[in-house]
Image 1 (cartoon, rainbow, N blue to C red):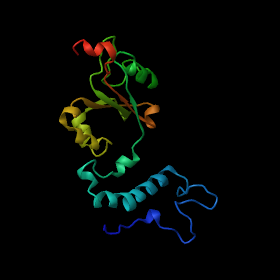
Image 2 (cartoon, rainbow, N blue to C red; image 1 turned 45 degrees about the horizontal axis):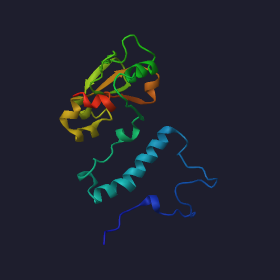
Image 3 (cartoon, rainbow, N blue to C red; image 1 turned 135 degrees about the horizontal axis):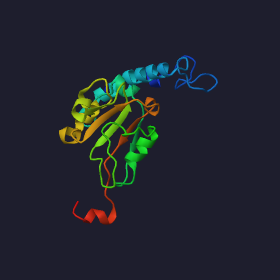
Image 4 (cartoon, helix red, strand yellow; image 1 turned 60 degrees about the horizontal axis):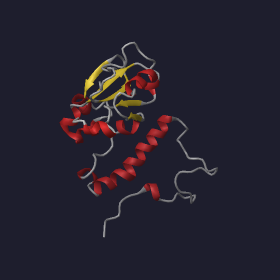
Length: 186
């Protein structure tokens, strides 16, 4: 028999409601602000989910516990497709077609993107190698350390100013081979 764990998320409140809903059926957001929602999510994780992860040693077979930075991270948009179909060109178009593209990007008829590139909002244009991004507590990539040095050498973070990057992080990927081209010795 497992010891009982505290679980405030599933306790009934004195009014008999469950799940944090108001009388009118709308979810409570602590005043409606995004910041209040983040705080409520962090509190729910810390009080209800993290104790379960620790009790069952979740980090020993999957992932380390979430940090506040992980919870507050912007959504990621991952572009996957065959090589030379325009993934990088599409990203550059979304970013407003800067003259040279996002920092570190190359566009051409042959496969040019040879690594995973997370394009994120930053104060200036710069490229951070994957190893440095994965140990930087101010970036949401610490979980990538689990994939090892070989992956981190094929990963980098490109920072630049763009209005779309205020809301999402875009990940450009190397092309994948398809069909007949897989048999040509690549």
